[in-house]
Amino acid sequence: MKSILLIGMGKFGRTLGEKLLSVGDEVMIVDKNEELVNMLAAKYTNALIMNCTNIDNLKTIDIPSFDACVVAIGDDFQSSLEITSLLSDLGAKRIISKATTEIQRKFLYRMGASEVIYPDRDIAERLAVKLNAANVVNYIDLDEQNSIFELAVPKKWIGQKVVDVNPRGKYGMNILTVKKGDAVNADVDGDYVFAEGDIVVVFGGTGRLLSFATKK
Image 1: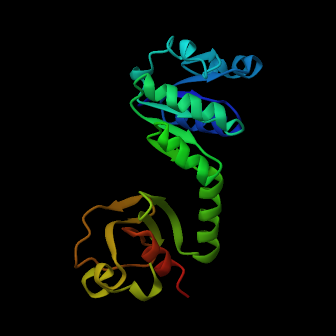
Image 2: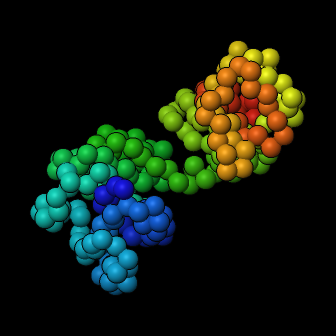
Image 3: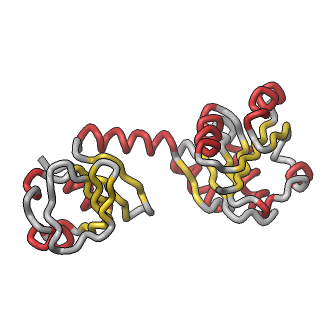
């Protein structure tokens, strides 16, 4: 369970808040819209009506006590930038800010963001991958160069051992685990034989994984 300060309760903030609650996190929400906060307050650990671009307002919250502070403002970049900077000045452990453009992402990092999420770009990228790679079940970008992909086992691998397929040598991917339904095989060695229905979880360079996944 994490303690999360969620600033900005627009569509993205509300969706994120619901997801955080569903996994058991303690969530404090903040927005300057009184009607919106009053409507949502009962669901959350705490709720404040506040303009977070004012440092005196933010000082009334124990910012360092939260595991993460999320700046989920999408329609007012100036405010997002100022709040990110103020949270950094007040000792936030981890600041996750929302961007809508690449230039915004760069500025938010400069102002102290630990991570910058870019939902529109991320959704577009995921859709592009899914449209071109039906065997990609899911993927996570670890940084700008590396990702973890969940792949439906390629047909040509079925019945073969890991050592014979040689994913690392041939495709630059490291097998982390293999899933089938609800079962997870965390001990996949060279003698493991791929079977129909396997979901292979692999780590590697994003470019090489995408190339492999979209290869016809």
